[in-house]
Length: 417
Image 1 (cartoon, rainbow, N blue to C red):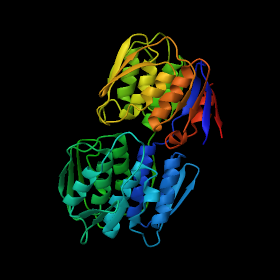
Image 2: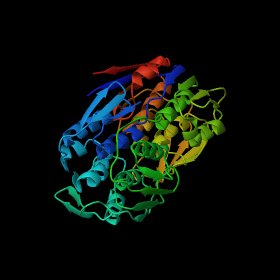
Image 3: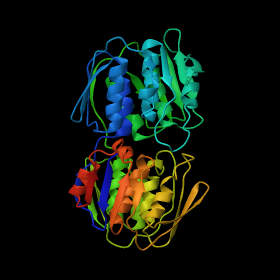
Image 4: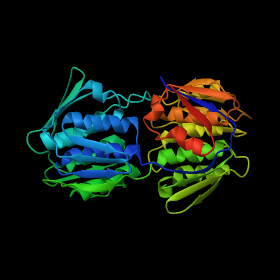
């Protein structure tokens, strides 16, 4: 397996372009199954998860081609309705195949999904909602078998938790359902709005995306379109924290400051200088930072996908701080690895207590999941000496050109095959 070698201690300085959002591109790619007309999606990041999704769509019967950062989906052959374990196990987002295939074929068999080891993340919210749309659901031999008699029927669906994946899945399914669907307590993430914008360009009638109530008026057919994926707010947050942890100065181009307010507010309170334009953010270290507590929450709260990176930063901030994880039940796997680098961290249930240390020291560390990997890279960039980060295939799932972008900023980083 590949490894990343980082010699820390260099202040990052320069500018990088923020890639398209993986978490936005994935549901949009799956939603191309809703039409046989050509669909072109730009600003798609080059990532392992994207490649897996393109392969998945081609397996199902869609002709999907990726060139650079553009994906074009063409008229399909006859769709398969079975999504096997070998494809689904590679990533959690595979469950998003359910919505479009149920809408188009009236049936879909999906192996129970895989993904990062950060908690159980059951799909019961998805299944309950499909049931309200009129689908019949059975779980058998490791597969979820979902079917409907004719078109799905619109319904009022009240989520007990604003699940991003369930909101996306039901939106995608409901655009071709008969009648009106209302999703109550929907996820409000920017990626939800981006998906709705894409669906509406195809002829769907989705209103309220980005708020807690989404209304979908079903249509009988969708058409082709073109769409540009929004900027990746989690990647942007990671590079802002990279500027802070290395006492550097980084300009992010093609960013979306409006989607990053929870992060930039924390960084400003800590003492980092943040400057924003409509589509750029700069972060400059000007003085010793102050410790800041964080509590993860659904959007627009502090994102769970930035919890690990924030922990790495606070590990080097003098004083005491704490991070409470409320979204996932098993998202502190990076704590042990950060301790190997010298961080002073204590886990107490859903909370990690941090006592800032003066310096981190290089060590070999191992990535457990995507965002944990980002935290280890950030810590290694600030640590004294040469660190080896292994199991970086997790990072390849979510960070486009990570080493290249960090080298552009002056980092001493290289990949070892």
